[in-house]
Length: 267
Length: 271
Image (tube, rainbow over all chains, first blue to last red; front, side, top):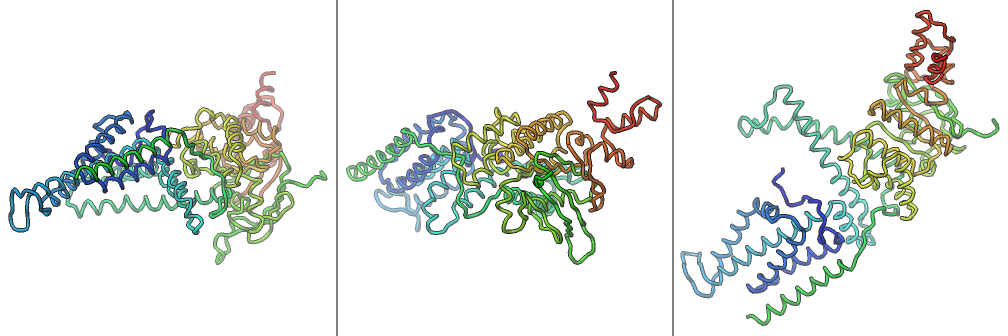
């Protein structure tokens, strides 16, 4: 579990951390979309440098980001290889049945590789520098227009934040149940896969049971505190938009301009 | 008293399984005045927790009725009456809904659609009352059980209720923090004229309360001031001070033969 960097929050005090969650979320999604429109090496070089700059600004070590890429590296290499082998055009170096390695193919492969890496880097920047709750609030704020269509956006946001809040409790509980099983002589991580899977049953069942109990008790508390789905309620957590957030979005506009210019002039 | 009691429980009965003749509570009645505190005591299975759930409208009685401020508690009035009461349950983890201390205290206020500025001041005020103000931005995993329970208490205080109910809320606390939280409660009770019901099996909590209601197997055994209850019911396990007094009398010491709170006993012994 510890090796999973994507989706974890790294408390720090940096310009990127202080940005409004809405600005960060919009900018990150926009940036990922933008990546698919770049079709020139210079464009990739430019957004690549931009990404590195943003990563530097988070004041988080580069090794943390690299760790985020590691579990996915084979998938990325595989995707890039496919692009290399199945794209023709330009100078052909090797040709073997349906497979060709051409200059065009090598470029496309490199772009695919860059695109994946940059997507992972930028989404890692987002999750490392934003508290999960703030992200939930941002999603809530951005989905607000859907409320007019009758989508229960607030309930959804509350559900999300409650699930996030209970992750540490669930981990604790898993540990406790496993310890209880160990005390009764169960040895985890031994035997065939089927045997190991069977050992999971007495862990999962008590976890389910206690989660249901917990949910019921929480529902009681929410009920007594007059929570009513669909009712208008105020928000104690306030997101505040600063000038730096507008600047962040303006930078996205600037990036778009650069990408367009590069795409049209460097053919 | 001409003033009507804040809470009046009239002859309520409840059973969980209507196919069986086993009542969790049968024909319970009692009144509670404004600013009065009541401890409900009884052993496991005496129906204490059922009573708490009935009072908050989480369950509805099979027979009888509950009146808060003269209004009967039912499906229709439940929502309005719940604005006047707050409850703290036993397990601190399961009542922590938000991801940080101040957000959790604000949860009930958010539901009442209270504007931000007012929420801010009420949350801060409530956190100050329970001495948790400096922890306001912490998340629940950084708090001890006692601290979480204080946050739950603040969540109820922020709602400025007229009736606070505690369902074994202090069981998980160590004796020191339990004492300090009970002292805080007593201060709040007299300052804000709030009524308090605490459901407990901890005898040492008793001396913080104005009166006692003793339940046994769903039936009301007695209601009265601690002194009266322990005088009449010698079978009931008394709080530590009273036990000590009884033991001292048995050992031949010359002490008055009536119930004493801890401070009274200390005063008498020091004479």
